[in-house]
Structure formats: C-alpha cells, structure tokens
Image (tube, rainbow, N blue to C red):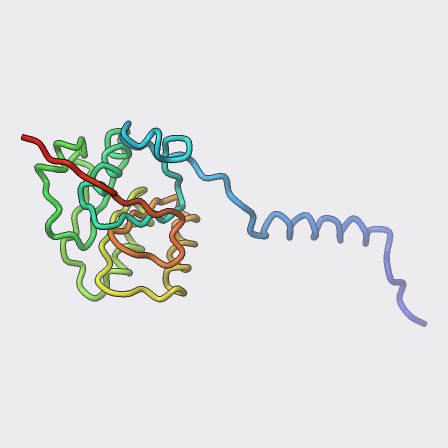
Amino acid sequence: MTAPLASPAGPSRVEELQARIRGMQASRLESKAVPTHAAFEQVLPGGTLREGTVVAVERSTTLLMALLAGPSASGRWVAVVGLPDFGIEAATRFGIALDRLVLVPDPGRQWLTVVAALADVIPVVAVRPAGRIAPAEASRLSARLRQRGALLLVAGDWPGSDASLSVEASEWQG
C-alpha cells in the first residue's frame, strides 16, 4: 500500500512555501533618490542619483566634489577614499559639510575592503581605485551597495557602472 500523494493540508502548505520562496527571491528594489547639486537637475534623470548604484566620474575631481555636495548638504555622510589631493577648502566651497566627511587618502592595497566597509555605514562613498578591479569583485560590491542603499562614485573606470559622467569642456575665470 502506498501513502496518499496529497493530504487535505498538503496544497495549502505548498502554497505557503511557494509564497515564502517568492518573498525571498531577489526582486528589483525601488531605489531612493540621492539629492544632487542644482547644476545636475537637467543632466540626471529626475535630477538625482539613485541609492545602490555606481557612477563612474571621468577625469574631474571638481565634478566628483559637485556630486558629493548635494548629499552632504542634505545631511548625509560622505566618504572619499584614495584621493590624497582632495582639497578640504574646495570641498567646503562646494558645500560639503566637513563634520560629515570621512577621508581615507591612502587606503593601501586593501582599498576595495575599505570601500566595502565604508559603504556599510556611509550612504555616499567616492573612490579612486588603486588598480584594476575584476568584474566579479565589482559585481559583489555592487550587490552590497544595493543591499545597503549606498551610492558609489568612482573617479575613473568601473566595470558595469550604472552611469558615467564626464566634463566635456570647462572654463576658468578670475
């Protein structure tokens, strides 16, 4: 004699387990807006950056500072890693609050570990990578950023970045 394939409680238990599995499966999370400097309102979709994303910033510390100014002015902490020439006076003029700024000028060979640790507690992290990053490492960090709701601004190239910003022309007066 064989056992019955389904008991009266069976289908409801299966449906319950399926619902739990659907709840645990990865789904697209709606990311929140990260405020930016007013100059970016016409450049960025919705005039903001998004939590959990990576933005490559090409050849411009000034652009990087301008991107950090909005989140800082809104009260968020920001961190800067691997940019020893990041000027405090210039940062202040952009509106970056020094009392909510973490600077790690030289993270050494463990720069990726430093960035990942900072992204766990600081919502906006800027980094100049100390070397090439493997796509697998970039992917792991991107997953961590999405999980924590952190924004990574990269001074340079980054495999699989969500966006890339650069300055096409600049002008100086004074």
